[in-house]
Structures are given as structure tokens and as C-alpha cells.
Length: 195
Image (cartoon, rainbow, N blue to C red; front, top):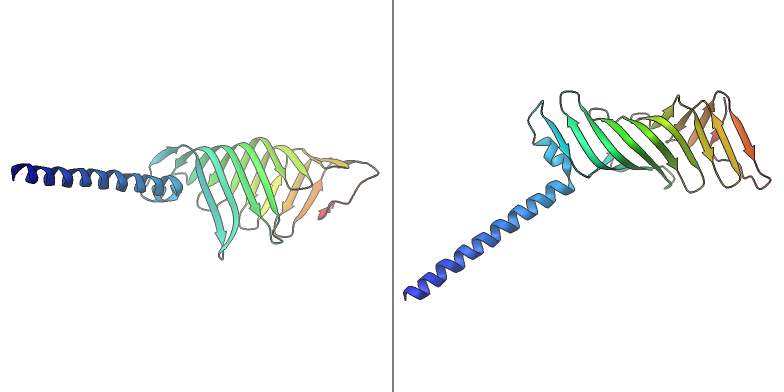
């Protein structure tokens, strides 16, 4: 009788231990897959450093961009996150995507604006733009830089002192010292204009 009672108690303890481990694991996975849950639970004014993160910005139920970073340092008082090793996908109206890589970025958490720096590369299926610094304004969906840019494709190469890319209109404007090298197989860059 005592052995049966002891076995029952041990079984209950084992089941409780397994249940606790499963609950902690599920809670950890929930936070690691949605770091904004962790950020929202942190007291005001706190700083936080995280490993790899993912974040998606939506407007009216539509994805506008999706961000992945190797690490993030969140500063509540300054309403910003310093991100390292960034990869962002921008979703355009015509179901096209634009990809951006950078060594570092500063995400303004109150506006979703982002400043990129270090080996900044924007690319789509046809072209690749490189520069050292770039900014994204979330409200207008504009990417812009006052640093020199180079744009290369299969049959053309362009350079300019600065550029603005309107994601909503899928249009890029190059300004200052614009130069182009075009091969005979050139197909015009859709949405490209010079003021």
C-alpha cells in the first residue's frame, strides 16, 4: 500500500515537473519569436540588449517591411533601437520586393523610421544600389541618401551624389553628378527619373 502511494506521489511530481518545463519552453519560444512582447513588458526607461530579432511593420493589415537583425540594443528613454547586421524586405504595391542589407541601423521605435550605415546595399530582381548611409521614412515610404550611390544592372551602371526612392510609386530619383554607362543590350530602368 505504501509503495503504491509512493509511486502515485512520484508520478504526480514527475508530471508537474514535465508540465513546468513545457510551460517555460513555450513561454520562451513565444518571447523569442516575438521580441516586441518582451519589449512591452520591460519597465519604462530601461535599456535592453537582445540577440537575433525579427520585426514586421504593417499598415491597414498589409505588410510594409520585415526586419531581421543579428542583435539589438533597445533604449526606451531615447525611443530607439541600435541594430547590427540588418536584413530588411520591403513589400511594394505590385507584389514586388526590395531587399536591404546594412552593417548597422537605428530604428526609431515611435515612428518606425530607420537610419542605415555601413555597406548599405538595396537590390531587387534587376538592380543593385550601394552606398554608405541611407535613411527610411516610414510615413511616406521613402528611402533617401545624401551620400554617393552606385546602381548596377545587367546592361547599365549609374552613379549620383544622392538618391531618393519612393517605395509607394516604385520610383527612384538621382541628383547631382549623375553619370551612366549603358551597354547596347540596355533595357530602361522602370521608375527611374532625373530631375
